[in-house]
Image 1 (cartoon, rainbow, N blue to C red):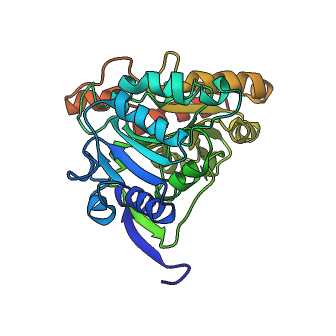
Image 2: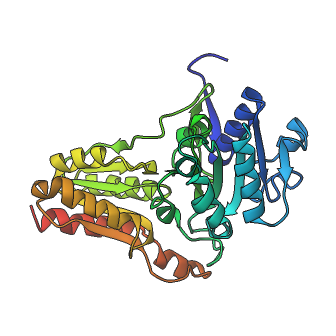
Length: 332
Protein backbone atom coordinates (compact mmCIF):
# COMPACT_ATOMS: atom_id res chain seq x y z
CA UNK A 1 0.00 0.00 0.00
CA UNK A 2 1.60 3.29 -1.13
CA UNK A 3 1.79 6.28 1.16
CA UNK A 4 -0.57 8.40 -0.95
CA UNK A 5 -2.99 5.65 -1.99
CA UNK A 6 -6.65 6.68 -1.73
CA UNK A 7 -9.46 4.33 -0.84
CA UNK A 8 -13.22 4.63 -1.27
CA UNK A 9 -14.86 4.51 2.14
CA UNK A 10 -18.04 5.49 3.97
CA UNK A 11 -18.24 7.47 7.19
CA UNK A 12 -19.48 4.32 8.94
CA UNK A 13 -16.49 2.34 7.67
CA UNK A 14 -14.10 5.12 8.66
CA UNK A 15 -15.32 4.95 12.25
CA UNK A 16 -15.07 1.16 12.20
CA UNK A 17 -11.49 1.33 10.93
CA UNK A 18 -10.65 3.80 13.69
CA UNK A 19 -11.99 1.40 16.32
CA UNK A 20 -10.23 -1.56 14.70
CA UNK A 21 -6.90 0.31 14.65
CA UNK A 22 -7.26 1.31 18.30
CA UNK A 23 -8.01 -2.28 19.34
CA UNK A 24 -4.95 -3.55 17.46
CA UNK A 25 -2.72 -0.77 18.69
CA UNK A 26 -3.44 -0.90 22.41
CA UNK A 27 -4.49 -3.99 24.35
CA UNK A 28 -6.11 -1.75 26.97
CA UNK A 29 -8.75 -0.59 24.46
CA UNK A 30 -12.13 -2.32 24.42
CA UNK A 31 -15.62 -1.45 23.16
CA UNK A 32 -18.79 -1.81 25.19
CA UNK A 33 -22.40 -0.89 24.63
CA UNK A 34 -25.81 -2.12 23.55
CA UNK A 35 -25.74 -4.47 20.53
CA UNK A 36 -22.12 -3.64 19.64
CA UNK A 37 -21.18 -7.34 19.40
CA UNK A 38 -23.43 -9.98 17.84
CA UNK A 39 -25.69 -7.45 16.17
CA UNK A 40 -22.76 -5.42 14.86
CA UNK A 41 -23.94 -2.14 16.33
CA UNK A 42 -27.26 -0.33 16.02
CA UNK A 43 -25.79 1.55 13.02
CA UNK A 44 -23.55 -1.36 11.88
CA UNK A 45 -20.41 0.53 12.90
CA UNK A 46 -18.95 -2.39 14.89
CA UNK A 47 -19.98 -5.10 12.43
CA UNK A 48 -17.39 -7.87 12.34
CA UNK A 49 -15.37 -6.67 15.32
CA UNK A 50 -16.69 -9.34 17.71
CA UNK A 51 -15.49 -12.09 15.37
CA UNK A 52 -12.10 -10.41 15.04
CA UNK A 53 -11.41 -9.44 18.66
CA UNK A 54 -13.65 -11.67 20.78
CA UNK A 55 -16.18 -11.06 23.57
CA UNK A 56 -13.65 -9.77 26.10
CA UNK A 57 -12.93 -6.71 23.95
CA UNK A 58 -16.28 -6.25 22.17
CA UNK A 59 -18.78 -6.40 25.01
CA UNK A 60 -22.56 -6.50 24.61
CA UNK A 61 -24.12 -4.80 27.63
CA UNK A 62 -27.59 -4.79 29.21
CA UNK A 63 -29.94 -1.93 28.30
CA UNK A 64 -28.60 0.30 31.06
CA UNK A 65 -26.73 3.40 29.91
CA UNK A 66 -25.95 4.45 33.46
CA UNK A 67 -24.63 0.98 34.27
CA UNK A 68 -22.30 0.43 31.35
CA UNK A 69 -21.11 4.05 31.28
CA UNK A 70 -20.24 3.66 34.96
CA UNK A 71 -18.41 0.42 34.10
CA UNK A 72 -16.44 2.35 31.50
CA UNK A 73 -15.51 5.01 34.04
CA UNK A 74 -14.36 2.35 36.49
CA UNK A 75 -12.29 0.61 33.81
CA UNK A 76 -10.67 3.92 32.84
CA UNK A 77 -9.80 4.61 36.48
CA UNK A 78 -8.25 1.14 36.56
CA UNK A 79 -5.92 1.87 33.66
CA UNK A 80 -7.95 0.62 30.70
CA UNK A 81 -8.96 2.66 27.63
CA UNK A 82 -12.67 1.94 27.14
CA UNK A 83 -14.78 3.10 24.23
CA UNK A 84 -18.39 3.34 25.41
CA UNK A 85 -21.01 3.38 22.65
CA UNK A 86 -24.39 4.92 23.45
CA UNK A 87 -26.90 4.38 20.64
CA UNK A 88 -28.26 7.93 20.41
CA UNK A 89 -27.64 11.19 22.19
CA UNK A 90 -31.16 11.06 23.62
CA UNK A 91 -30.27 7.86 25.49
CA UNK A 92 -27.16 9.53 26.93
CA UNK A 93 -29.49 11.38 29.29
CA UNK A 94 -29.88 8.08 31.15
CA UNK A 95 -26.12 8.22 31.76
CA UNK A 96 -25.94 11.96 32.43
CA UNK A 97 -25.17 11.49 36.12
CA UNK A 98 -22.23 9.23 35.29
CA UNK A 99 -20.92 11.61 32.61
CA UNK A 100 -21.44 14.92 34.36
CA UNK A 101 -21.13 14.09 38.06
CA UNK A 102 -18.51 11.35 37.82
CA UNK A 103 -16.41 11.26 34.64
CA UNK A 104 -16.16 15.03 34.33
CA UNK A 105 -15.38 15.66 38.01
CA UNK A 106 -13.03 12.86 39.13
CA UNK A 107 -9.84 14.76 38.34
CA UNK A 108 -11.02 17.79 40.31
CA UNK A 109 -12.57 15.84 43.17
CA UNK A 110 -9.44 13.74 43.59
CA UNK A 111 -7.19 16.78 43.82
CA UNK A 112 -5.61 15.96 40.47
CA UNK A 113 -4.82 12.33 41.36
CA UNK A 114 -7.23 10.44 39.07
CA UNK A 115 -7.79 11.01 35.36
CA UNK A 116 -10.61 9.30 33.49
CA UNK A 117 -9.30 8.41 29.99
CA UNK A 118 -12.72 7.44 28.67
CA UNK A 119 -14.19 7.87 25.18
CA UNK A 120 -17.97 7.90 24.74
CA UNK A 121 -19.35 7.69 21.21
CA UNK A 122 -22.97 8.31 20.25
CA UNK A 123 -25.11 9.17 17.25
CA UNK A 124 -26.75 12.56 17.09
CA UNK A 125 -29.02 14.65 14.91
CA UNK A 126 -32.06 14.27 12.72
CA UNK A 127 -32.83 13.64 9.09
CA UNK A 128 -33.45 9.87 9.23
CA UNK A 129 -37.09 9.89 10.42
CA UNK A 130 -36.30 8.42 13.82
CA UNK A 131 -38.58 10.85 15.64
CA UNK A 132 -38.27 12.63 18.96
CA UNK A 133 -36.47 10.04 21.09
CA UNK A 134 -33.68 9.29 18.61
CA UNK A 135 -33.01 12.50 16.67
CA UNK A 136 -32.07 15.45 18.82
CA UNK A 137 -28.83 17.41 18.83
CA UNK A 138 -27.82 17.68 22.48
CA UNK A 139 -24.05 17.99 22.02
CA UNK A 140 -24.34 21.69 22.88
CA UNK A 141 -25.60 20.68 26.33
CA UNK A 142 -22.46 18.67 26.99
CA UNK A 143 -20.30 21.54 25.74
CA UNK A 144 -21.46 23.38 28.87
CA UNK A 145 -19.65 20.92 31.16
CA UNK A 146 -16.06 21.52 32.35
CA UNK A 147 -13.88 18.42 32.50
CA UNK A 148 -14.82 16.86 29.16
CA UNK A 149 -14.09 17.40 25.47
CA UNK A 150 -16.91 17.40 22.92
CA UNK A 151 -16.05 16.39 19.34
CA UNK A 152 -18.30 16.55 16.27
CA UNK A 153 -16.56 14.85 13.32
CA UNK A 154 -18.15 15.72 9.98
CA UNK A 155 -15.56 14.67 7.41
CA UNK A 156 -14.24 11.22 6.63
CA UNK A 157 -10.81 12.32 7.87
CA UNK A 158 -12.22 13.33 11.23
CA UNK A 159 -14.43 10.24 11.51
CA UNK A 160 -11.30 8.15 10.96
CA UNK A 161 -8.81 10.23 12.92
CA UNK A 162 -10.49 11.72 15.98
CA UNK A 163 -10.88 8.47 17.91
CA UNK A 164 -7.18 7.76 18.47
CA UNK A 165 -6.53 11.36 19.51
CA UNK A 166 -9.45 11.05 21.94
CA UNK A 167 -8.09 7.80 23.38
CA UNK A 168 -4.74 9.48 24.01
CA UNK A 169 -6.41 12.26 25.98
CA UNK A 170 -6.18 11.72 29.75
CA UNK A 171 -9.69 13.03 30.33
CA UNK A 172 -13.19 12.07 29.10
CA UNK A 173 -13.98 12.75 25.45
CA UNK A 174 -17.47 12.60 23.94
CA UNK A 175 -17.71 11.99 20.18
CA UNK A 176 -20.98 12.84 18.43
CA UNK A 177 -21.41 11.08 15.07
CA UNK A 178 -24.26 12.51 13.01
CA UNK A 179 -26.44 9.63 11.89
CA UNK A 180 -27.23 11.20 8.51
CA UNK A 181 -23.52 11.07 7.63
CA UNK A 182 -23.04 7.33 8.18
CA UNK A 183 -23.61 6.44 4.51
CA UNK A 184 -21.58 9.38 3.18
CA UNK A 185 -18.91 8.01 0.86
CA UNK A 186 -15.69 9.50 -0.43
CA UNK A 187 -11.94 9.22 -0.84
CA UNK A 188 -9.63 8.86 2.14
CA UNK A 189 -5.92 8.20 2.40
CA UNK A 190 -5.38 4.50 3.05
CA UNK A 191 -2.90 5.35 5.82
CA UNK A 192 -5.00 8.16 7.33
CA UNK A 193 -4.28 8.53 11.01
CA UNK A 194 -4.90 10.68 14.05
CA UNK A 195 -6.02 14.29 13.66
CA UNK A 196 -5.95 17.34 15.87
CA UNK A 197 -9.03 17.62 18.10
CA UNK A 198 -8.58 21.16 19.39
CA UNK A 199 -8.87 23.35 16.29
CA UNK A 200 -11.63 24.39 13.92
CA UNK A 201 -11.02 24.20 10.17
CA UNK A 202 -11.87 26.55 7.33
CA UNK A 203 -13.48 24.19 4.81
CA UNK A 204 -14.06 26.88 2.17
CA UNK A 205 -12.39 30.32 2.09
CA UNK A 206 -14.46 33.42 1.40
CA UNK A 207 -14.52 37.17 1.88
CA UNK A 208 -18.16 38.24 2.30
CA UNK A 209 -19.58 36.19 5.17
CA UNK A 210 -18.37 33.70 7.79
CA UNK A 211 -20.68 30.69 8.20
CA UNK A 212 -19.90 28.85 11.44
CA UNK A 213 -21.22 25.32 11.79
CA UNK A 214 -20.41 21.67 12.55
CA UNK A 215 -21.59 18.11 11.91
CA UNK A 216 -23.99 17.41 9.07
CA UNK A 217 -24.83 21.11 8.74
CA UNK A 218 -21.31 21.60 7.37
CA UNK A 219 -22.32 20.05 4.05
CA UNK A 220 -25.48 22.14 3.84
CA UNK A 221 -23.32 25.23 4.39
CA UNK A 222 -20.87 24.12 1.70
CA UNK A 223 -23.72 23.49 -0.75
CA UNK A 224 -25.16 26.91 0.04
CA UNK A 225 -21.73 28.50 -0.44
CA UNK A 226 -21.48 26.94 -3.91
CA UNK A 227 -24.87 28.38 -4.86
CA UNK A 228 -23.97 31.79 -3.45
CA UNK A 229 -20.67 31.83 -5.33
CA UNK A 230 -22.67 31.64 -8.54
CA UNK A 231 -24.32 34.91 -7.50
CA UNK A 232 -21.08 36.68 -6.60
CA UNK A 233 -21.17 36.09 -2.83
CA UNK A 234 -18.10 34.37 -1.39
CA UNK A 235 -18.81 32.58 1.88
CA UNK A 236 -16.15 31.34 4.28
CA UNK A 237 -17.33 28.05 5.82
CA UNK A 238 -15.91 27.12 9.23
CA UNK A 239 -16.22 23.61 10.63
CA UNK A 240 -15.98 23.90 14.41
CA UNK A 241 -15.09 20.18 14.79
CA UNK A 242 -15.00 20.52 18.60
CA UNK A 243 -17.59 22.31 20.73
CA UNK A 244 -15.48 22.03 23.86
CA UNK A 245 -12.86 23.42 23.79
CA UNK A 246 -14.42 25.92 21.39
CA UNK A 247 -11.82 27.34 19.01
CA UNK A 248 -13.05 30.92 18.96
CA UNK A 249 -9.73 32.21 17.58
CA UNK A 250 -10.49 30.68 14.18
CA UNK A 251 -13.94 32.17 13.73
CA UNK A 252 -12.96 35.53 15.25
CA UNK A 253 -10.08 35.80 12.78
CA UNK A 254 -12.46 34.93 9.95
CA UNK A 255 -14.96 37.58 11.04
CA UNK A 256 -12.19 40.19 11.12
CA UNK A 257 -11.90 39.54 7.38
CA UNK A 258 -15.53 39.03 6.31
CA UNK A 259 -17.20 41.36 8.88
CA UNK A 260 -20.34 39.22 8.98
CA UNK A 261 -21.23 35.99 10.80
CA UNK A 262 -23.98 33.41 10.36
CA UNK A 263 -24.19 30.41 12.70
CA UNK A 264 -25.91 27.22 11.51
CA UNK A 265 -26.77 24.83 14.35
CA UNK A 266 -29.16 21.89 14.20
CA UNK A 267 -29.69 22.17 17.96
CA UNK A 268 -32.38 24.31 19.53
CA UNK A 269 -31.90 28.07 19.52
CA UNK A 270 -32.63 28.83 23.18
CA UNK A 271 -29.55 28.27 25.32
CA UNK A 272 -27.75 26.42 22.52
CA UNK A 273 -24.14 26.44 21.36
CA UNK A 274 -25.10 29.08 18.78
CA UNK A 275 -25.87 31.49 21.63
CA UNK A 276 -22.42 30.87 23.13
CA UNK A 277 -20.78 31.55 19.79
CA UNK A 278 -22.78 34.77 19.42
CA UNK A 279 -21.62 35.90 22.86
CA UNK A 280 -17.98 35.20 22.04
CA UNK A 281 -18.29 37.17 18.81
CA UNK A 282 -19.73 40.12 20.76
CA UNK A 283 -16.88 39.89 23.26
CA UNK A 284 -14.09 39.39 20.74
CA UNK A 285 -15.11 40.92 17.41
CA UNK A 286 -17.91 43.43 17.98
CA UNK A 287 -16.13 46.31 16.27
CA UNK A 288 -15.34 44.12 13.26
CA UNK A 289 -19.02 43.53 12.45
CA UNK A 290 -20.80 45.32 9.61
CA UNK A 291 -24.09 43.52 10.35
CA UNK A 292 -25.75 41.79 13.30
CA UNK A 293 -24.78 38.17 13.90
CA UNK A 294 -27.54 35.81 12.76
CA UNK A 295 -28.45 32.18 13.51
CA UNK A 296 -30.27 29.39 11.75
CA UNK A 297 -31.19 26.71 14.30
CA UNK A 298 -33.46 23.73 14.73
CA UNK A 299 -37.12 24.48 15.41
CA UNK A 300 -37.92 24.38 19.11
CA UNK A 301 -40.16 21.33 18.93
CA UNK A 302 -39.71 17.61 19.59
CA UNK A 303 -38.34 16.22 16.32
CA UNK A 304 -41.27 15.22 14.08
CA UNK A 305 -41.44 11.79 12.45
CA UNK A 306 -43.08 12.86 9.17
CA UNK A 307 -40.35 13.59 6.64
CA UNK A 308 -41.66 16.98 5.47
CA UNK A 309 -42.07 18.15 9.07
CA UNK A 310 -38.63 16.85 10.05
CA UNK A 311 -37.08 18.76 7.16
CA UNK A 312 -38.97 21.89 8.19
CA UNK A 313 -37.63 21.54 11.75
CA UNK A 314 -33.98 21.44 10.65
CA UNK A 315 -31.69 24.05 9.03
CA UNK A 316 -31.70 23.63 5.25
CA UNK A 317 -29.66 24.93 2.32
CA UNK A 318 -32.38 27.28 1.10
CA UNK A 319 -32.53 29.08 4.46
CA UNK A 320 -28.74 29.50 4.50
CA UNK A 321 -28.75 30.93 0.97
CA UNK A 322 -31.64 33.32 1.66
CA UNK A 323 -30.18 34.56 4.94
CA UNK A 324 -26.69 35.02 3.50
CA UNK A 325 -28.01 37.06 0.58
CA UNK A 326 -29.94 39.36 2.88
CA UNK A 327 -27.00 39.80 5.26
CA UNK A 328 -24.55 40.67 2.50
CA UNK A 329 -26.74 42.74 0.17
CA UNK A 330 -28.61 44.73 2.78
CA UNK A 331 -25.41 45.75 4.53
CA UNK A 332 -23.05 46.01 1.58
